Length: 309
Length: 266
Image (cartoon, rainbow over all chains, first blue to last red; front, side, top):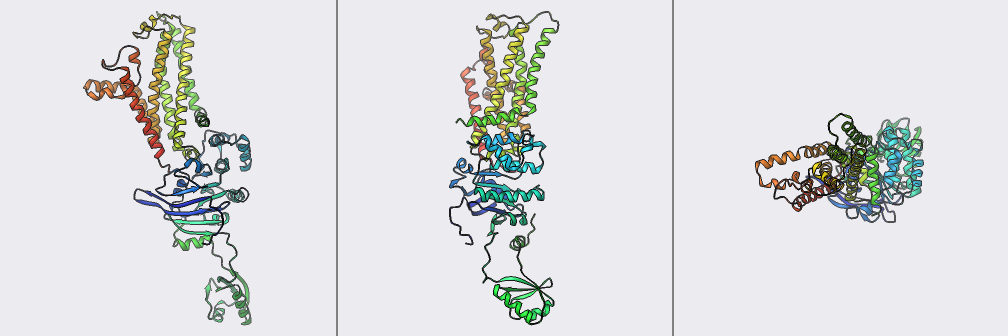
């Protein structure tokens, strides 16, 4: 396992399966979510992201397996399990004929112990104070998105589930959301579960991502990787004046040409040695850098280049 | 259980925040006053007593109250689905059964409210405008019943029966709303029963089917027993209540079962 955090997971998906008719929509999905983790749930449209989320919050039945939230089964102890969950499923659909405040009041009445003070606090937090007493039908999509987040965090959940939260947000809004979610996770210890098909977005937002395709988990990885060990070979790009000739000098190395650059598989020490060799041989070395594959590159590699979006 | 009232408050908030609800209430008020005014100020040879006016108007107003309550019932569940708000409503620490019950209770409360408005207005306005006769003979002469009782007793029993009928109409509308998630279907079907239920029963009656005795439309309320004129000689009050009760239980069970089982997707 690349993940070895101690402590009991806040949420466990255990072999979650959904069969509709004869079609397996979700096929034995198992994932553990740790406390205070921003968790990305990635897959192409139709991969089963929303179906999984709906099962996690009890909107649709689970054919097989279970979702355990803070030790409570969503199937057998729904009311106890869901108490720890705040969510937006797909679009943040609120009662349009009520004001933002009335919407929050409505949800606050459904969980004991939410005071008016807490509502005010949340309104302040999401920055909707000026418009909170206006009817929701006058809100922009971004404002509805924020109100959606407000209703999801009103009862201080341990798990916050957001389905495609960046949909309809402008770049500024996305950035704010990103910072805010990271803050929630860090300061309040909330586990945030975010689904998206926007890989670059997830890469910036999440600590860890799982990738699903056709209802199956195909990858589960940490994003904020702890520094790669020095002894591990990586693909390193050298920008030199005569790349083709330089390649000949590096006989015996796993190396090649890439867009006019010279690439070599080498660990940290070898990189220094290669650099020395090139310089000794009279090449000009302008730049050396590790070729980081973006999540998107990795994703496309894994899903066999299937188009996302 | 205290907290259950909070759910009902939520449903009330949703009902009374809509303009259509206030239109309905306003319509009942204006219609009642209008009917009394017509009766009073249009020249006629004979002036009704207040009880008779109240009884006639209740008959007309009930029709609209039934329509309005059925519409509210139809919208109650179907609108949550069509607007997508059902998703955020169901992911709270409440069972679906209780959420559904809170909706049902709030609709019945709305029906009671309209009924109370109708009662107060038809009684108050007509007492003001028309001569008052409180003898027991009114029950026979104005209400067409064989009972020997005070007019107010008869009126209260009549209202009780109309409420029983309203409950059944609402329950049917609510069931359609929860099962098919379509308010239009729920409204159309309930109003069809309200307007043509008796007619359909009469046709079946005439055709002489034996099972016609168990058709719900003949047992929507128990006014015939109050008037001493059952729809069919062999019918008794307990029989009608039993038929009503069986239908009621089936409708309620279907509504709750389907709502609890339903996958909320799309």
